[in-house]
Image 1 (spheres, rainbow, N blue to C red):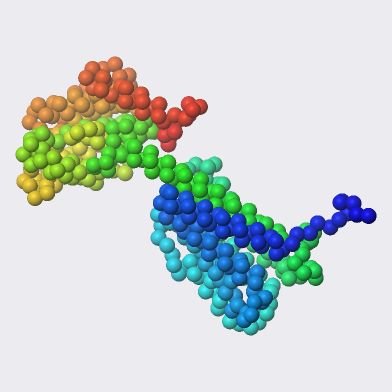
Image 2: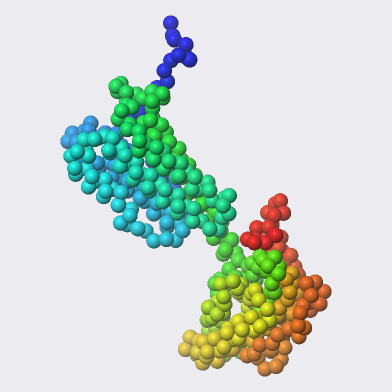
Length: 434
């Protein structure tokens, strides 16, 4: 007669657990490498390779002492530690940080040196403590790297770091729990009442699955962000395009409104650009545009927004009053007058005209650009290579005074850009905006 299920001891076969763990790790490694081949994100290749390197280490650890001749002491663990080091460096690569080769192999080197001492090699508890410390250290620094994603809010960042921290916590707990004293006498079987080995294997599998999931989510977000950035970037100059400027402007205007500070706009137009194209060719004209973009970008502050609005026309939005706007405008104008004297070996003597406008907190972007556009036309009419500011000292927040020509050109684009910054629930997606 069979004993009631409630009184039967629950047991797990460790060998089976290791086989399952090996298969899952290999499958996840192949999946990450496939994702890398599709998206070409280098971090995915590092993660996938780390998983696949972990597979032979698991197999070698399982067979250690069962093969003849026996494997060198500690080699299996050393390979596993290298895999953990690769995962940490994968997180670094994901955020554009350099690979630390010495730190990658540091855990394995410490382990192999320790295994040279006979007393350490023959003390399972000491081996467990050191291996747990190495693994916990790698997972904690991996969590720290994943936490570096500054584009995410705190609420969205914590899942990426939580799984490595949880995994590290399990190994930290093992510091004071010598597993060798908990191992049962039976071959290959661990009872759940004292199954720390089974628990560590199960937790390792969950960590592998959870980390792979987080990595794929981060990679997907990175791919979407790259495509979005490409849609908002001018291909020739590398600056924001018209749509990108309109989107970025929403956040800066809202930020200035909350701070109660003025907002300014600059409009740039390269002088006699059609003549440059006609005389020297469009290739030289493109180089002139690229040179101005680089000059303007280098002359702007980190808080300023600058982009190409189309053709030879550029726009900048910056926090500050009219005096601040004139200082920035003059810095760009004079720098380009110097840099544009010779372009691609041609004596262009290229210059730029600038229109500047400023408004109080809450000034609409369309109205601000309309005033800057009108000032730009005055600069053109007065001889070019100069700066003209808005005629009115202060613009009202309402845009009723905007020039009809500028308003007709910008109203639809501003509305479209503002709409693209909203999620389905109507919440703003622009950092710092309402």
